Length: 609
Image 1: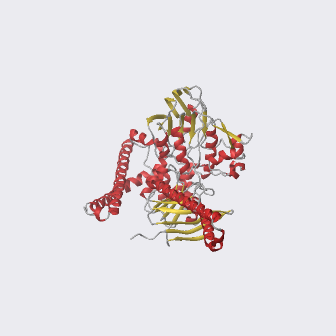
Image 2: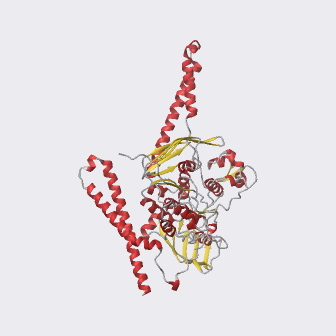
Image 3: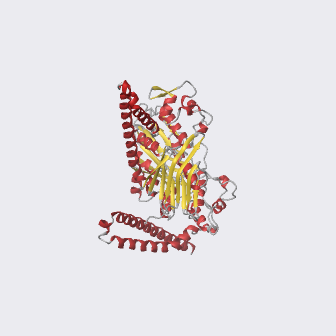
């Protein structure tokens, strides 16, 4: 028998400034359910999550939480002001009786010591601290709003594995498709103020959504046809019958009212790239280039040739030097040694991950037109700026609004609108997926994949990389970069392991732009490496964890040994099979981690002897 929901929202309604944001939204969360909340930017996902957390009060509706259940909420922009250290911020989120050890373990896993001054944290480090604060109490319900923002790939994959291992309930908002597919077991679609639920993970959502929209369009067409038929009858029917057919007139009015109330799905962005003439065959030739900041190598003896039509993805932890590498390859920054030669007839369009190209005081209109006229040249043809903005899902009234009034996703769309209007045969995209909703991401991926020019792309989005790039350049540490053919998944298969590990964010910038590695922590007395708090804890607890997983695997194997299970209960058979695969993967991962730590322990003991 299914357990009752631990958290329920019923008929939630909320209006902001006269605009209805939520119009009868519902959400029910089971005790161990992992639910993803999806919808367009601005649809109210974050607001609904805040209502679930008890932070925002709805105009009407019912919120119910099982008595005694604990809830933790991860905000998009964490505020650490008022705390002397990161550890104090994490400990402040613990309930009476909770151990601070779990918070310290999480901080170390996320590349923080806990002694950092919150005033000096980068965006990524603040997000890591907020994650540790939310996860440390092991709440019954975890509400995460864009948890992967500002995180690099190693940290995203660590978080993914950590959330998979949790037994509590989870509601997740994210634009990272792979992250949603890996974690969710159910999907709630927030669309035009109301919600629909699919009792399957995000991997099945888009086909289901398309079916729903197709059914709506079919119903809309049916109503249009009936309205046309009734209008025709009224217009040309026998005059003498009119008094006897007022009921039919009222029915027509009801049909028209039903048609007006039939909701329209928000449009899809109509993005298109304006391509310039063909560039030369060779776009970039880098020969033995090196770059270091304060003695730390960012790029060491890199040789790479990028030809017309190549789409190169650049991957590495935050602080590895991805932006610096882009600046070197495009000639914006001079190498310390080696040479970079750019090809001929290059027309470059760039997208800056920090949105620094946008003046917050300028209007959207001026940003696109440069302040002259009311048209934008797109593909050699003039377009009215309001119409062009509509292609990127901006409302007409937003055209005269300042850039500062836009959300992060809207700023991203505005940058894309400006970049795509300019003729180019060489696109440099530094984190273009930040804050974009899933439908806009889909369109952007198609544009990049179909672009006939050359692309340099920095991204932490695994699915986006797989769909767009022809090769991946990976940071291997100490300034070494290695290129692999294919997308991100192809790179993993060739490399045999994931690059990097969850590390600090290292957002310090050198002159000329770009990121550089963080200062390495000072070694302990005598310069000898010691096991960290997390490593010691894992060594002590992993054997028991492995033993428990082995017992679970044996139980599931016994269950599946029943030859009649599949015919008697196919759903139970599929569930047990999936659980067996998951437990086996967790056991293998735990055994590999334990073996690594045992070898490390032996090496450290041998070094001290």
